Every structure is written in C-alpha cells, then in structure tokens.
Length: 116
Length: 111
Image (cartoon, rainbow over all chains, first blue to last red; front, side, top):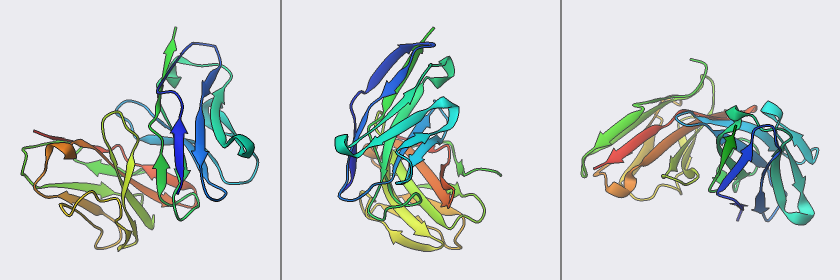
C-alpha cells in the first residue's frame, strides 16, 4: 500500500529565505507523487506532480521538488519565500490504481508560516 | 463555471439530521471523487465515480454515507443521521488528463 509521511507539521521561514518541506513516501511500485497547496478557505491547488519522467519537477510559483528513489523522498523547495506562500502544503501519492487521475493518498500536511 | 463548485459552502446540522452535499464538476470530466478532511488532517478518500458508475466506495466510513451521480455529472453526498464525528470539510474533485481539480469544499458542523 502507498503512504506518505510529512516530517514537519509546522515550518516557519523569513521572507526571502529558502523553503524546504520534507516528504517521504512508501510505495510498492513506481509512484506518482504530487504536492498540493491549500490556502485558508480556498480549494486545494496542484503545485507540481512527478510521474516517472524527470526526477526534478518544476511547479507553479517557483516551487520545485526532487524525486529521490534511494531516499524515498520527494521534498518541496523554493529558493526565496514570499508572504503569499503562507499556507498548508500536502504531499500526496497516487493510490491503488496509479496515474495522475486516480485515488490520492494525502499526508497530514505542513503549515508554512512566512515571517516579514 | 470554470472550476468545481460545491454547495452549500457551510452546513450546520443537529445530530441525527440528514444532510445532502452537492458537487458540480468541471464540464466533461468523467471522473469524480469525494474526500473528507477532518480538522488538522489531510483529505481522506471516500468514493470515486467514473461517469455514473460508482467504482470505489471503500472510503465511506459507514452505511450512513451514500453518494450518487445519476447522470454522470452532478454528484450528491448524503449523510444520514449525522453524528458529531462527521464534522469535517467534504471535498469534491473532478479529473481530466490534465489532473485532479478540487472544489472549495463544504464545511459540515454537527452539533
């Protein structure tokens, strides 16, 4: 069965400094992995997805993530945080069916705070 | 509209009441999912439709939960005899080859 573990429930950074949100996955086969962002009172928005093409995936708003099979990790990074990045971030793995459009399994989320 | 819409956005129910939550997916999207997000948690899968067929309902927590999509577009999630533990945000999502798109959710509070 697939699962993801987000290692930090809260991360606080200063504006303009790098962001690192950590995620480890467990999967019995090559997984599809995603990062979603959830702003207060707004719907979940897809940041980026990995589907076994390039291991470094670029997403929206300057975010990127690197798939490392040897470490079973898919950490999310951004070189310079902006105040508007403050939100909850979810690492997600696709479920039993595989593929980008099927059942998703969410991590417990990391709340990112950005200090001025 | 351009995105997935859900109604109502907020629902307060007394314990024991029945509720119905509506999802309007993006036009033309074949696949539709319902997720439940409890406070402070990530969303958890409830059920999945492909057109009008409910292909997976393994995430429904009890037989009080029922979902339907009779014409393959709008879907309704019904919860009978609501309990306090049903309080959560219920998210609907529809998908295409471009990915999965979530609605804003319905926040259900059971008193």
